[in-house]
Image (cartoon, rainbow, N blue to C red):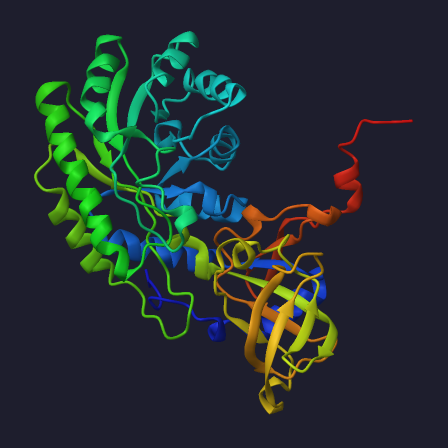
Length: 415
């Protein structure tokens, strides 16, 4: 199977296909390419050939993505009960599902422990009192302990999880908690940690340090407490969002991860999310307003921070391309692409050199397959967009466009 290029740039997407999908399904519109998801999965498997690979479902839970990845043989790492339900509905076997929640709500635990009675999924705990909560629900399935390794990394401080006290049990307390879990009759099968999201080349030293610490912890737990089936060192493998950024050398990352882990009598596991899906998706949006100003040309579009929140929340860069038929013939001008939300932060890019925009132009926003639709919202009472998966020479609707009636239909108040 071909694994495709190491990174898919926005310029590689078929402009005619995207224009046709926008005309058929309207904008704003997320477009996903399942074939690219398969290629990314194959590339990961080629590098991490001996490791256990799970998909961090939170990156994109749409059915085309879940069904595609389930068919490749990866597992599903779920951060909520809803993600567990969606993974099982997409065909993931229970034994391939891991529930790795942070401070799980009562209703989530109720659902997951009920499901665990019929599906042999793994429940990961990140606090000592989680054992009591599981005991109260008569959980006797497979258990994993999340450690806080004291080292974090990622593309933004808001996603560097490894050193934040919110995440996991302090590493020095894990052996005692592991011993307690075994004494109380839990099936301890693994350890877990996660450095952060969007880890790039400059963050790899922190990732290696996390892996080394987890290897040392695992050797201690195995020697003093119990055998382990796996040690999961998380995902966070970054992708290049800018055209001048090179993709990670996955073979080098895999080798460095194995070397840092060392000799451990347990299978090493990883759980990428973004890497599978980021460059497998684009967001299409239409220009509805053009406003020249002394500072920049503002292109007002129908997608905004409720459609793609990453630029507003993290200051993230996403490539933007004009799909106008004559875009290459127009003058290039500094352009700010702004959405319809009443917030200053509601911009997809600022002062970007783009083809001089005109009302009605179609724009494509790259690397939108990860944390795009997943983080969309109804702020300003704006319905969420549709999602289309490429199929053959066209597309297939995966998620219908919301209407205002879908939002107001949840309300129960009446005069």
